[in-house]
Length: 462
Image (cartoon, rainbow, N blue to C red; front, side):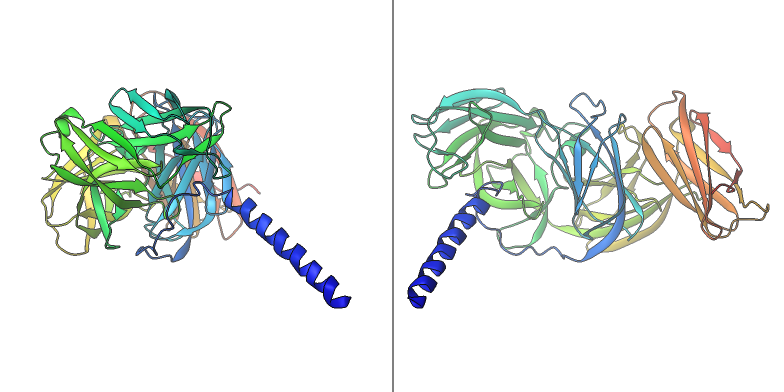
């Protein structure tokens, strides 16, 4: 009798476990995407501070978006900004993910230039719009502004991984690499892993964000035993550069980098190919990269935090990123080409442009001092004293302008911060000074535009 009861109990446990396993599978982003092979990117974890600005398709701040980084979650404010003061992330591939109803998820992957220093990111969200409808049972063709997709019969699955019957909406958003704000829109950072599991850079010839939805708004999936045929128009300025055949890449949900998966063939002004699951896809040419590091200062030696960098080769291939609070950028660049380094503020207006390279191995360029037009620049400096009117030896200054934080350390009772700004409009700066040794602070606000400000600070509040 005991053995019978034990057997019945074990059977119940097994049935429960099987049901629970099925339930867990339903929570996967896409149950049909192949499991990734181990990434060649290091998984070393570090502590960092990360902030950013989230904007919509018209470059207006997105309020109330959910931002995730590591194990932490934040919500964007009226400026579209968020801040994680301390978060644990992958040093070589830190990830910020943004969710907002009506938009595809915004995802930025980037390197941490130095642990425990404030790093900046900027993300523009893509609107998620239903641009075509087809019948799941019969299949059909959907044509959008610059692309066509052909679905075969009984190709769509529900969240339970069973065939779906009913009307299906194709959610689609194109991304043109020719756009000046392309670096803010694209997912990841154009780092890719090819079929040989080697890290490469990508020269994209267009991107497609794709998702399927039911009539009730349920996310749907593709049966990977069947393929969707696509045709995507190559942006006009890239058609002469586009190869006859080019690898296809999808943005991988687990590693947050691009993975090689198939190929596309040029036909007239378009690329054609097939897809077995939906994500963000790009026909793109891979190129070899080397690691690169540089520190940016102004003409007076003040560090330039949150500056935007574009590093473009003579082939048109390029990489992008931002400096951290110490003016340091760390990332990958095109190998073996003469490069143009462009430094700008948030709105992509060049503050300094110069030639560098070529580089055939990992390179640290050291310090670059830039000549920045006065109309694009704010400079703060001054003395920092304690309640007893003595110089603060160990402290920090944080200045918030237009929703963005700029930080610097206090050295021998003085501070200096350089800020690249898009316009000369009057705004308000909120300045917080911290005397770490005495555990004292102070906060002041002042009107600013674009010029040089000498502002002495006293840290004398609890």
